[in-house]
Length: 202
Image 1 (spheres, rainbow, N blue to C red):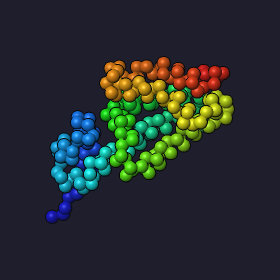
Image 2 (cartoon, helix red, strand yellow):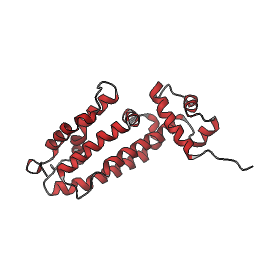
Image 3 (cartoon, rainbow, N blue to C red):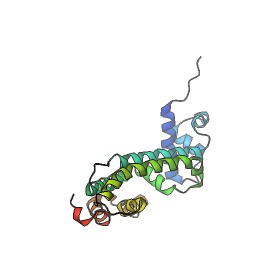
Image 4 (cartoon, rainbow, N blue to C red):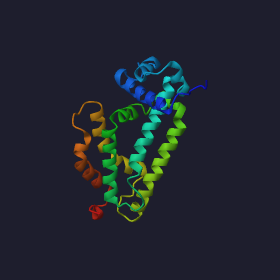
């Protein structure tokens, strides 16, 4: 009889089970046994895909990072106007967090964890790719004078920073209202911070 390998769906089941286990008990207290029990898989199935809890967490982190970056980067291009691009980025950030609450909490809480060392190069590559995507929008707008000429990290921080404060408060349970309820005000604040006043309505 041919040996049946664990399916791709089992890997996804394990990732979702890991996310649930980390939410329920915290990352440190979660165990491989917890994750297997939630996923309903054998020990062999777990270790077919992941050599450890840390490896699963790293895969989960990268999946969340790629999902977030994709949601943000696809909203802007070199043809997107300054004010329009700010609106798209703020709203994309808020929408991704609300639609992917568990992933967002994990992504933001675990960004400095030691176990990320095993995928640090992949994390840096993903961040660099995202930065290039956003710069394809930013650089022409700085050149045509519709965005302030600020270092890219400062520009991004001014656009996303206030929205991120609301998101973190909601993810931690300090705020009950979803952060996208404040999308209009957050967009307006971001525009005032980075869009040149003569082009704020463009």
